[in-house]
Length: 218
Image 1 (tube, rainbow, N blue to C red):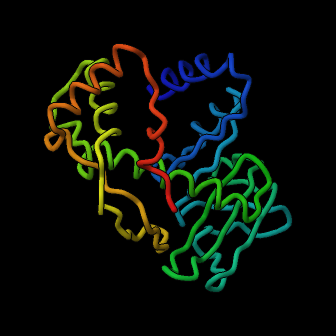
Image 2: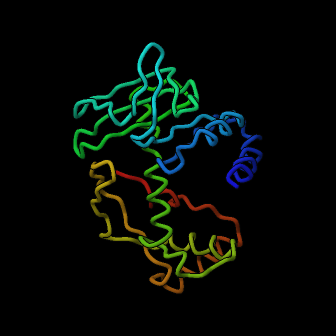
């Protein structure tokens, strides 16, 4: 099922001639997915479970979860193979977060470094955007809107709603604190004049300058 979706995305991205880096959590750590992404010409950074078997040339196989760098330390293994099928070569970035002390194991199609963790961290921004769209902000699911045009007007209206005093501090999954991130408003809280503005923006095809401001961190 995901192959059809990825193939469609690849066709849409083809005219842009850009480098695509696919980010995914442990639930998507599948060698068939990795192989298909590689076939599409995409790169990928996917978090692994500790139960994955790792094969290194000249070394005994081991489960990656048994590799335990010290707190605040990172290891980078290149040209290794994973799973009993010995898929690869792939590259690993293994670290233990200095604050949460959580282990991070990221498999990559490209040689790993500290930049690998920064690249993978972009996924959390994406997840927060989804959260804002749902229970933490716009409540899009509760709106039961199925029209793409109507959703566009809703976003346009929400992005123009003033949010004084709504900056807050939040703790991310990585244990780091982000400050100044504004809280979005639900569609139910939007005044009628903002909804009318959203409709006008959608009909005129206007892209508002402050559209990105709602997700920008200080």
